[in-house]
Image (cartoon, rainbow over all chains, first blue to last red; front, side, top):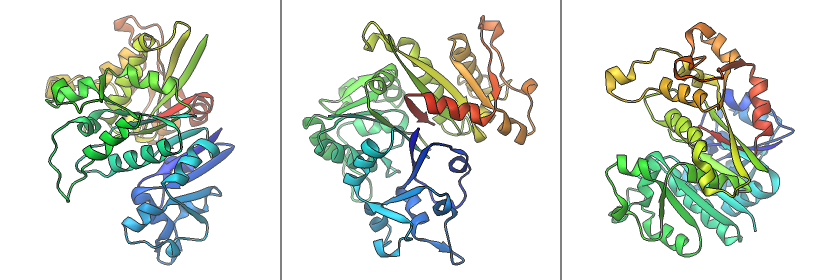
Length: 98
Length: 119
Length: 137
């Protein structure tokens, strides 16, 4: 299964996310989830970025919150709404929203 | 052309999730995809006409009416709407009101489903 | 015959918000989805409770007596009555110190033929894997 997981909340630990298994798993940070892409608590990036999955963040939601694209961790690919549509149809078969 | 069904259960006022849904639907439509939006729970409020626009609150009536005119299907849960005291005559023209099984049927024919639950 | 499987996965707590209730009512609405589909088409729902969502399955809800509202328990029993597969994550049940005795495992009094199943998370993951779509409540 190719599973895209939308993460809409800022939570450095995400039990659900850590349990999901798929042959291809991607994390798409939207809404408050984008803080995971840019914030470093005590100098450390969000553990969500270290799950070994591809991580995306929505540029519009970064900008809305005063987070510049430059502040985003190098592990994260920044996409816009057009990019989200392409991810949904081209990269993943199923999508869930957390 | 592929079809995206989006289920939105979050409220219009007090949440930015409906804004997300509308922007995603708009982007998908521009790329030539069919889009169904199912509004349930507090999400049904997006389908109610006559909402006054304030800058402090999400105001999507104009945008979503344009999307519907452009071919997007927006259907609200009838029971969820009635429970909130708004009736068929309150529905924005061109929008649908159906029972919950409509959503499942939309999922049946969808290539992708993004279900956004409530809080 | 075109049958599509939809996995309804519930990880929210009951009552404070209507999210888990809407998961149940939407899953049960699969009973009437045929009216919108072609003759040879249908949907098979699977209902799975994971994480805090397993707490929906604690039995003896008194929501009807206290608040005059349909209980989640009655919806879960109706799901069993309509032959919807109900899965409860056993790791989470154990984590919360619960056992099958304290959970809604059957709807015998309604005449349901099937029971809830306590299963490992991996089994639920496999249901998600084989589903056509996942609705995560």
